Length: 592
Image (tube, rainbow, N blue to C red; front, side, top):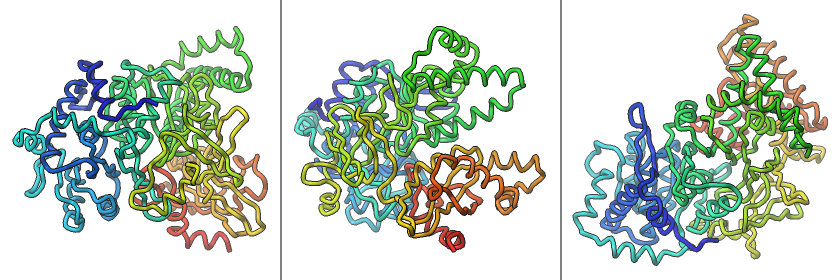
């Protein structure tokens, strides 16, 4: 493991790659870029400003912002001062923002725009430690500083860069760099204390198993509050002199993938599954002759994937077909979906459907599924030369994995957190005396050292007859139906499995239109034909399940799960406990 801090990594990249573009962002119809040298100047300027405001090593500042250049500059300035950043999801409501700012005892809250500034205005009087609010965009009301004013404060006080550089050299790899709060699927979020070593390990390990260099382009889409994006889409590219381009969000990502043409892209499975659906829908709408050509090309790609998975050679005939399929069809699909030069996609945070992984590989783009948690990023990652679909791959270099007697996955290594901020008892529960972190996930480790996640330990359903049901793999199988967007299994201490189902309304409406059924979601889910369709789909995709694992009864709801609705965490994980409470009245009818 490299014995460097985030400040030293940035400094070395600036010395080596100064004129190269480091950060890119959309401005008007095009993109503008900051070089590494320009980023360095802005980081040092903002660092002087933070020091002028009285920030010192160990203090905490909170960041409430979407991905943007100012986010990176703030974080890097803090890391160059020994200040701890507290990354907060901008989608969180005011009450939750207040909890995180207060729990971390942050002295400064830095926000992106008017929407986030309104939250800061509401919580400022209630948080005892909060001294300053800083806005990245103006104009600002009295009592709020602009981003530029912080930099100007540093100039006015004439703080020496040399003195701050000397201070930065006293920071050690084991000093705390950030607090990242757990998603809080159960109970209050806890602040995982992650050191410089922990945050830099993923990049250091990744460079040992994949080719990465200054020519790579990363499209930053996942929130920088998300541990995957933080270590893989922020510190990793900055450590190799690569370019980071910031996405404008979910409504722009499709076009951005085409225009930015990233070589590496990190995201959660939900986006890749949506992309697969859109590609399939587009294929189905083509003229018959063209559609058959596309289907043939994808089928050739799939056959290649299946042979590789079975350990068989492709052979000269199939190889020739694959080359023709790529020239005629597959390269065009890649260009229209991921830009055409992506070497691999990376995913984590939730299980990736094996079908989705196989589909993209058939197109010529490999998705590398990995595994990690807020408290210990990244534990495992599939290798580009031989990804094993349905698994999260072997451990990264220097990481260790063990399966406990009850099936729980235990992990330890350089990326492990130092503990939960202000919660020694919770820390002791999570990390045992031998340094193993208890992940709460259930899994299997193959003789070759490849890890497969089977479920969350707390999610295991125990039926009234004592049978154990792991819901996640079953839900993943049922979501392969084109008419099922989300499904949550319920049944703990009950006689049978029941389910809350969110239909895929775009597909469902197209189906309903052909049958002259009502298109309003609230009316459509009540229709007998709709219920029969969903039942048939669940039966079809349950074919390989044991009888006690199959959904016996279900209810349909007319609105998608969302962060705003409370069903999803900011990292798009399903909050089972919340859903069970929110739809308790419906579940009660199912289990009677």
